[in-house]
Each structure stands twice: as C-alpha cells, then as structure tokens.
Image (cartoon, rainbow, N blue to C red; front, side, top):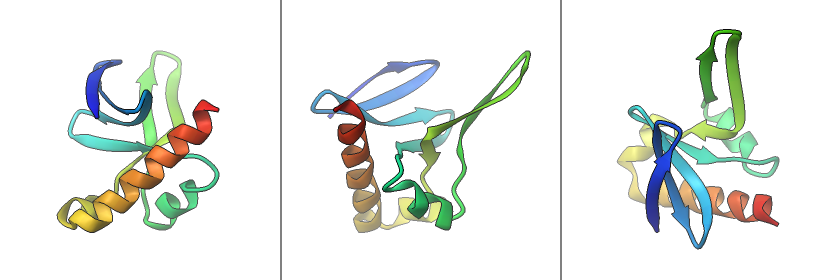
Length: 91
C-alpha cells in the first residue's frame, strides 16, 4: 500500500488502484453499487465539497463509519470491500 497527494488530501493506493482517501480528519472508502448499500445502512455520508456554485457530492467515496475505527477486524472488512470496488471500477 502507498499514499499519495490527492486534491488537498491523501489517496491510499493498493496494487495500482486507489481504494481510499483521507480528507481532513475523515477516511473515505471507495464505493460502488455492490458495497455502497453497506455504507448507507450504517448511516455513512458520501464525500462532498463546496464550490462557488454550490455543494458537489461524490458518491464514489463514503466516510467510514466512526465506530469501525475501534474494531480492527471490521475496519479490515470495510477496507477489503473498498479495494474490491476500486478494482471493479478499474476494469
């Protein structure tokens, strides 16, 4: 795994695919139609930012639910799902 600069934050890359990003103090994981429902069910929100024209929402990345940071096994499960989503997106 490696980290690289990514739009004012940090992108996390594994085997050539970006599966996560850290913006401010929030870890966002890659989502797609297969794993996004898990994030929505956990009450997670997509990455968003403001521009002069309004708010932009990026549904390709959702915040990791905070309680997952306290459980190493759960965190690993969510991260693996994000890597799988990134690989599906890369094809």
